[in-house]
Image (cartoon, rainbow, N blue to C red):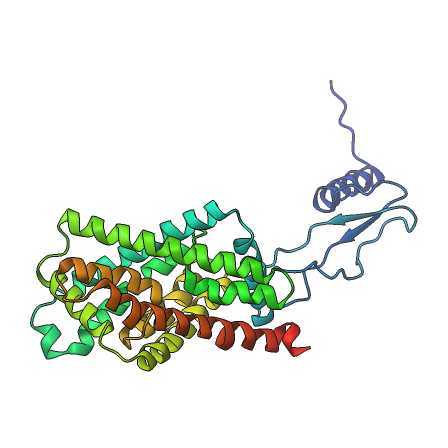
Length: 337
């Protein structure tokens, strides 16, 4: 007959103690003799991920002597950079983009010109074919055009592309903060504007060949081209300043956001705003005006360049350098020191 043995209170206490110790071991990790365990606290910076976390004194300490072991603490999930962090990140981006090999700058700029063409053609195709509503409510046609056009910057900023308009702000930021030279700036602007022109022009030719520039799309392309080449130099320049101020702020907001949804919101509102207000964007015009000429607008290449491209490029550059780069360098960078 088997003998039933009763567990002593001491044995039960020992088993429970071992179980608790095992749980603590699994939760806190092993602390070897002669070392100290320190739980790393999250960053004290409230806005985002840039910069090293500031360590707080550990609440769990083993043996006082020996090296310190750090266990990762909670993950920082803040989704927006601070304005100062965003400015510095854009200065870093401007330095990196301006110092790439020339062919890489050209490639990124050419592809980005094609993305502008995609957005321009989309906007012409939909806004140009809304029928009598366009005449009855001109603002509706502008709003439709503006609502669709921001797709280009969403593609460009999230695929590493380069536009001359964005480079007018980010590269001067890098120069102002000592991260790039004036030579880098000149190379960046020249190559990016050349790549944008060729990408936009190639896409306009492809749209014509594919048969997209017909009907309402053709008519809106012609009307847009005539309007864009009928302004005075001063009007084109001022509209370009206003436009690229909005564009560069879209770049700023996109860089501030840490997730794709935030970038979409940051891009959409400023871009749709400048389009709906009929402001002048040099790279957009590198697609829209050639497309209008190909569609039948009575505008020469010389008129396109002299009446639009030159004043608009100058106005866009002024906005990028003065209104955005120098302004935020004064607020957060070396100009304000």
